[in-house]
Image (cartoon, rainbow, N blue to C red; front, side, top):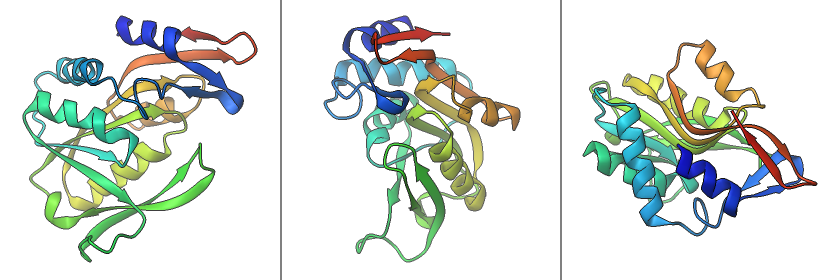
Amino acid sequence: MQELKEKILKEGKICPNDIVKVDSFLNHQVDVHFLKKIGQEFKKRFEGAEVSKVLTIESSGIAIACYTAEAFDCRLVFAKKGVSLNQSEDFYESKVFSYTRREEYPIRVSKEFLGKDDKVLVIDDFLANGAALNGLIDIVKKSGATLVGCGTVIEKGFQPGGKSLREKGIRVESLAIIESTDEVNQKITFR
């Protein structure tokens, strides 16, 4: 998605440890008009797929997944991080290691919101090592639902997550794939 690449180059910053900071439009301050275009792009890329639910992890993926669910005219379900007093006691759970937080945490989805009749599109903001997507895929499998595929806004192609998922036969659509980053010169190269 050329417009996304241009936005990353204009507004993105490269931080230590290959962190690509795009919080000015994607995952802290949100450009809602742009995210609507992202949702429509995922709809285009998964055209013909029957999607009954869009699944993501709180919190950065919610805005993106919301516009994607709107484009597919379906419900959005998000996995909650950790334990919540208002969450059902009957849930699917998986563990996810956060690259940016350097910690493992549980993610949970109430069983009432995901089941064997669902066709699920998993959406997230970034794909690096694949931990978040693998955790969500694990929940889809535990629910008995059908995984349609995974959509990510930005994939770090120089990290193993995308390759690993594709080698498992999972359909992954990334709207921008970063080939390399250069923190010193603040340079990003796309695939």
